[in-house]
Length: 159
Image (cartoon, rainbow, N blue to C red; front, side):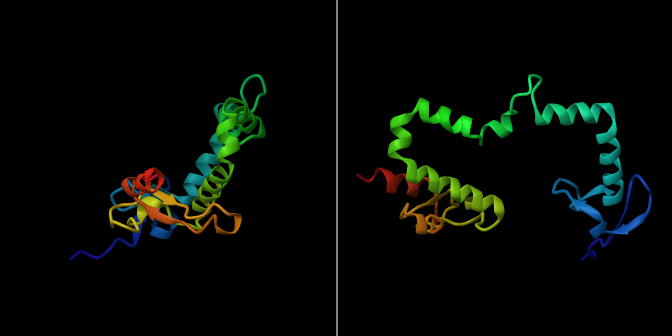
């Protein structure tokens, strides 16, 4: 068997460096990007100071009229209020479920919970897609079970 690669040559500075000096990239053959971290940092810094970089950064943060951009609007109080106006009965009736779902998403992003699609279903051992909440009470919101779509539908439609 071949030995694992422990060094790599940067395509910018042409230096041979250990793999720890390269960012990971799943689509590259050896799993690391071709530019070393120092060259990537220098490139990004130079690009951010250019006119194109400044314009792109401005567009990313705000729209032309100074409104909140789309990615920030989705989590804003203004968006929450709009959802409440659009579906007031639904959100009034399902507020505990919505809050529990939001807490799970935050925990997954923060790394406190693994993504459900990396776990087997608790009941049938297929690949899980969702987390099921046995209880929506505040102290049990992170007590979840990974389940596949079929099992999750069974729990919510068994009435």
